[in-house]
Length: 576
Image (cartoon, rainbow, N blue to C red; front, side):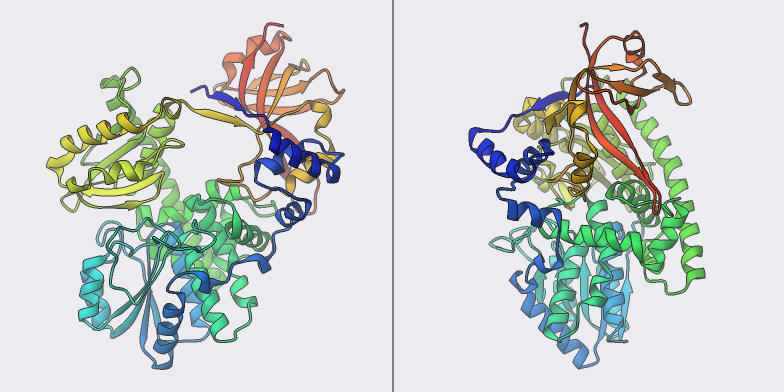
């Protein structure tokens, strides 16, 4: 689907800031424009942005209830109580459990962890698990990346003498669970400076506060930032504030001395010897860790991430890699089935603003991925449902700018359970409620979605020519890493470019174009790749001009040089 190109020049006020910054970055003109777009208003702020420091992490005790949480944890350890670390089965949950469990193991032995299975236990905490914890004499449960809506379950636990510390980042309801402490930067009235932590990030802040309260040095905890970086990338939380600081230092750890389990995954991904980026985490490392919870048990991911033996870590990595291969096959088949259903329904021609699709035989672990693919293909908020434990259970994904959480919340009276974020929601309902849910969900979306939210938008950061792509400029661009929401990889537009005469079709079905590009401002020839754009080849091969939107990619290998490539995102043809 072709995107609409958006370029918003700086306002008059922003231009003043840009002029100030340009004095410092005069030889790399577009850099100051990129900084202003990211809210940087001074050279001092720019230097801080370019060199993220762990000293800039916020005081964890600024988070409401942190003092209560640390006090309860200290009392549990002082009284030799049994502690359970409990978390969700996705990447964020398993990295959070791995971090908290392994860190506390350095100081305390009466501790265990539990990861629910997607199929037997379902999402969140259950009374059955609480009963099991009670039988094992657990007195404190630290629950990570879930729990904010577990009102009845935590009330039930209290009756059994089990306390909860909730570390969550999902949107809370008005009524809160009766936990000893609720650590959630999205809590009503919270003034914590970084409201968009990952679940693992909240767990890190608890461990940071625990360390401060006990006078423990920071080195051991900071060595676990690779787990936090993986959670930040995989959960796609904003790459701003302390998320960016933790991701920056976590990536450094991934590239130097990663967790033994992550090292095994890095090797099996074929990333050994390569400089690992956030993109590598999103597309290679994260999906493999996630595949464990999707296909089998998230507990295996924790076993991998807490492994202390190389042989064990490698064996777990091989098993998890196979889960990922199985997941890909299922993903492909179910997506094809979903598209066939939507084709029969005439979805591409439909004026409906949302998609709700149900098949009782689809694999529960894959439907979130399928929802993402449908949203990307049709550019509509999508809900994909299957049957699990007698309920229609599903996942919803959204388009940029539209809050699908509020859309699902608008029909909560039809639901058994739901929870999530602005762009991703999990939900369950009785099977007979699907038709009414579909009608009312569409009614809400149609009434609230804006016309421009139903068309893909490609935001352009700067319009540049090839003469501006200098080694100094590329070097400065590196300092904008790590990228993510709120700090996306810069997208540039260059106009009136041409093929050097050596462009060719590549790919199994000759669907991509490998380019060598020139413009009128420089004698440089830049390599480029345009995926799935073979339809433009005749125009390009004829030497006619065209405009491109692109990102600048470096293929870097440790102890070796790097090669530059323009990753072409869109092409607009010109006649002259």
